[in-house]
Length: 121
Image 1 (cartoon, rainbow, N blue to C red):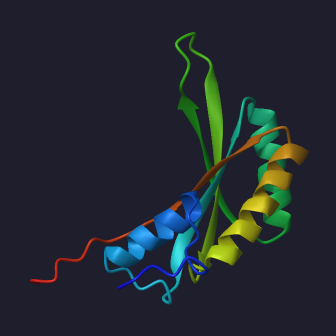
Image 2 (spheres, rainbow, N blue to C red; image 1 turned 90 degrees about the vertical axis):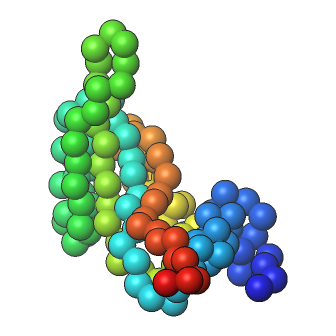
């Protein structure tokens, strides 16, 4: 299969989606995608979480120890069931970045389950 650079541009998101296709994933099937925003303070993550819940978003958050000085980060995941299309991911990333900035957080990327299929099976 030849890569269509209109559908899978040569950037991080396009490369991830193309790799998923090469691994045998059907991108036309819905996937649960996690978009992550990180915060330095519990108060920030809680305010953002409440805002997203009012917008009927499915969320989860947790505290993650990351600094050698013992300080923590808070990670907020927004779970979106969607067909994996480049433009939709880019639009959601733009929206997540705005939400992160509004609540003094930082957008940290997206991910979803991907399967590697063995053609022999």
